[in-house]
Image (cartoon, rainbow, N blue to C red; front, side, top):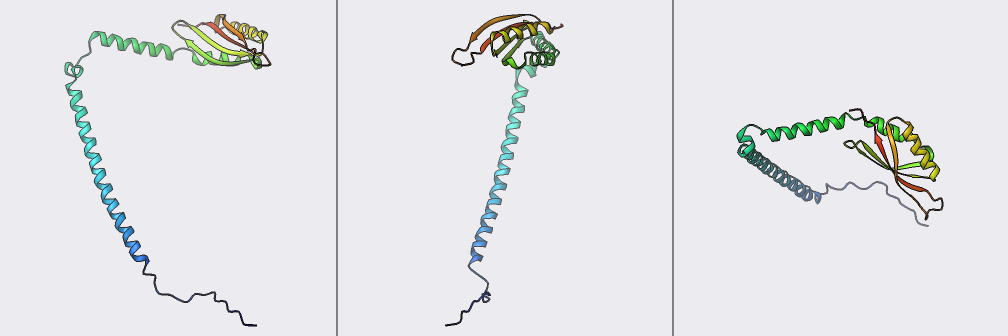
Length: 178
C-alpha cells in the first residue's frame, strides 16, 4: 500500500498580477463617475438658480403685487375664510367623537360619521345585530345631551346574512354652543 501525502500548505506563489488591470479599470471608472457627478450637480444648481430667477420675475410682474394692495372684495373673502376655519376649529370635535364611540356597546358597529357643522347635523351610518339594538342606540344617543332629536333616516335588514343584521342611517341634531 502506498503512502498518502496530504499537503495542507500551499507553496508560496508570486503576487497575482492579473488583478492589477482590473483594479486600475475600477479606479478609472470611479474617477470618471465622480467627475460626471460633479458636472451634473453643477448643472442642476444652475437650473435651480434659473428657475428661482424666473419665479421672482413672475412674482414682480403679477398685477396683484404691482398694485401692492388687496381689493376690498379679496380682503372680505379672506376674512370670511379665516372666520370659517376658526369656527370649525372651535367646534367640540373630541366630545362628538367620544360620545358616539362610547354609545352603543357590542350590538352596534359604526360604519361612517358625517358631521355638518353649518346645519348642525350629524349623519351616522351603522349596523346593529337587530332592530332592538338599533332602537336602543338611538335612545342612548338622545339621552347623551350632545344631541337633540335623533331621527332614523333609513334602515335595511340584511337578508343575505344568516344573522340578519340591520343597516341604518341616523340624522342627529348636534347641539353646538355657538
